[in-house]
Image (cartoon, rainbow, N blue to C red; front, side, top):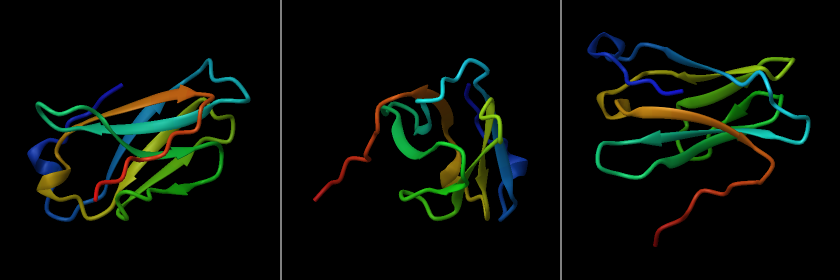
Length: 101
């Protein structure tokens, strides 16, 4: 699943991106990634069932449906630099964002 923001999404608006994962297993987490042109995907946020705030981007939060079959990546105050492709994935491994010094 991916989404690229249209130009009408900017100017501080709220934007939601939806993902369905109907075959998710009880031991699996939901991961979201962002990919800018000519760059690899970068981790944004992961969640299980409770709402999660991104540790990478404070304006981004993840809401997972109670049955965990879909999730919503929510942006507040959308800015031009948010324009990218967004991917969701499920898996049973824990992912940590990489750090640069």
